[in-house]
Amino acid sequence: MLNLGYDIAKFRSDLFYDDFNSRLAATGRAYAPHYVLWDCTRRCNLHCVHCGAAKEKYSAELSNEEVKRVIDELAAMRVRFFAATGGEPLLRSDLLDVLRYACGKGLNTGFATNGFFIDEAKAAEIKDTGISSIQVSLDGLHDAHNAIRGNAQSFQNAVCAIRLLLAEGIPVVTAATTITKMNYGQISGLRNLMAGLGVRMWRICLVMPIGRARSSELHLEPGQLKGLLEFVEENNKNGYPVKITLGENMPFLANFEKRIRSEPNACPVGFTACCLGVDGNVRGCPEMPDRPENREGNVLEKPFAKIWNEGFKKYRVRAAINDSDCSCCASKKSCFGGCWVMHEAQGEQCIYRLLGEKPPLTR
Ligand code: SF4
Ligand code: SF4
Image 1 (cartoon, helix red, strand yellow):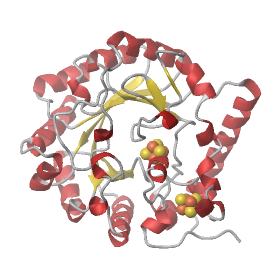
Image 2: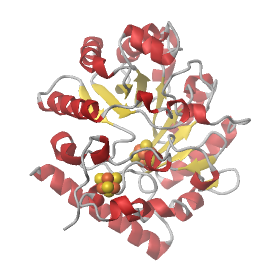
Image 3: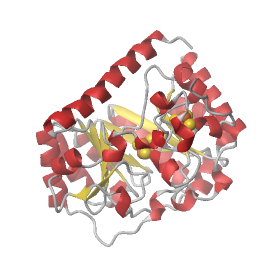
């Protein structure tokens, strides 16, 4: 399919990746990541059926001083964006203090929350940190959201949080939905709800085969995934006020790619993004299990810049496309082997196969 804007963006992004690796080989220093996600706590007040964060427990979290020391390093490297995720980030009593500090150092900041603890005073406090964006999870209409999140008050609190954050004028308020069989039938109703709330950005991702969601019962059937992508295509083409982005684990969309996206969206791990873990271990992204093979180094032992420059080797050589399934795929230079988390959880990561199709072969 011809999409000139997409093709130009793809050309530029290929140049960036080539340049990234050439510079690294020549100087031993990579370009700084655009964004660092801080997996700030695994504590959570809810018990979501799809939670990937349920996979690890920690005995210690980075202290306030330790995180601020990393932020100093990120600011010196000119990292653009620092955002917290969890668990529920607001269960860290110093979260807003840390984000305010990062803003003061010139970083754009944000965090992802279930919204449960955000009342009028907290929304004002959040705005006052200078935050640029916030993401609130909304996984279904009233009963479905409460069943998915395991709490009868969670829907009401999330909706209330979205209203208050929008009223505070935080620059970007995004609603986020993990799509499973439990809420697939509600996507249209959810869009109406969001439009009514005044939400402009809606981020949708697929459930990951990790943590509590390892079971396949939650995962979409191929026809449902196709229906979801058709819904997103129709939504964005027809200019609905709620813009949908497909996040996290959908780096490539097969035949829907150019129909839905205006620019490519390969997995950013090791090139433009990485994750600072709860106890200081740096890994690819928050969804990636915190296991020794995924750790690139610990900020309590080594400077962040050294970890960034010297680690992430398999991501930077796009090692996943050497797998037998991917090596002869005609889409491998756009997909690069799909999502690493789905790949390594030995779930299905190939978007064609998730859609019930066969990947195209190179000629
Ligand atoms: S075969 Fe591999 S490279 Fe090709 S689309 Fe599937 S996951 Fe991506
Ligand atoms: S590994 Fe998967 S979830 Fe993590 S950044 Fe890459 S595509 Fe996204």
